[in-house]
Structures are given as C-alpha cells and as structure tokens.
Amino acid sequence: MQKIILDTNVIVSALISNSYPTQILYDIVFERKVINCISNEIMEEYIEVLNRAKFEKFYNFKNNAEVVMNKLIEISIPYTPIEKITIISDLPDNKFLEVAKESSADYLITGNFKDFNFETFENTKIVSPKYYFENFKW
Image 1 (cartoon, one colour):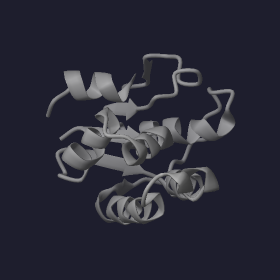
Image 2 (cartoon, one colour):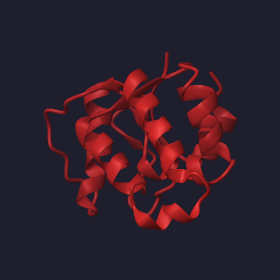
Image 3 (tube, one colour):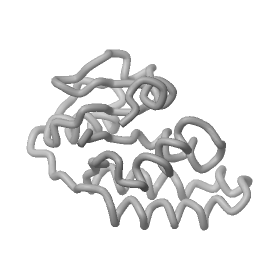
Image 4 (cartoon, one colour):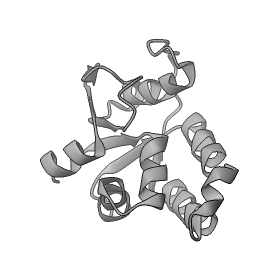
C-alpha cells in the first residue's frame, strides 16, 4: 500500500473547495486506500493553520476541520523523525521531508512548489494533488 504525506495546503484546499485535494482526502485517505504518514509537528501545523480566523468565512469550516482532524488522528500512522533536515529555506516545511525520510513515503502531495521545487526527496516523489489523483490511482 502506498504511503503518502499531505502538505497542510492540501488539507485546507480539501476543506474550502471541491477539487483534487477533496477527492484525495475523502476518497483515498479516509477510505484507507493509502497509508497517511504524519508527525506531531505536522499535526500541530494542521491544527494551527485550520484554526486561523481567515477561514471562518467559509461555511462550516471550523466544524468540518474538526471532523477532518479527528479522522486523520484516527487513521494516520505517526512517525517521529530522528534526523533534522534543512533543505527548504522556509524551515518549517522541512518537517514534511523529515517524515518522508523516516516513513519512506512514496509521495508528498503539495500545492507549494515555491518551496518544494524539486521532484523527489530520497525515494519520495513530490507531486501536486491533480498529478497524484490523475496518475497514481490505487
């Protein structure tokens, strides 16, 4: 089974639009067709970002975010990275690479190609939600 990591922007996009991130989150991750890899640091970022006031303008965002977080906590496999990585200049984003290395994830799914401007990290492919959904059906 594939191991994936969802960047925070994928979670946010899944909650505010009906698009590829939504399909990945609900139809793939929540249906346990892949293994979702997280760390405490990633979960903390999800929670911090999803609680930002700017998202209150979206209908039922807070309630939906709470449901999503509870489900992710329930089904995700937690990792505690040993090695600190500092490849990305936006230092907090390195936590995703740390989990990629620790978990040997197959894919890191992100919309942030400003910081994740490389195609692979170790054995993890870095792809957009659209690319993942269209090309890597389970």
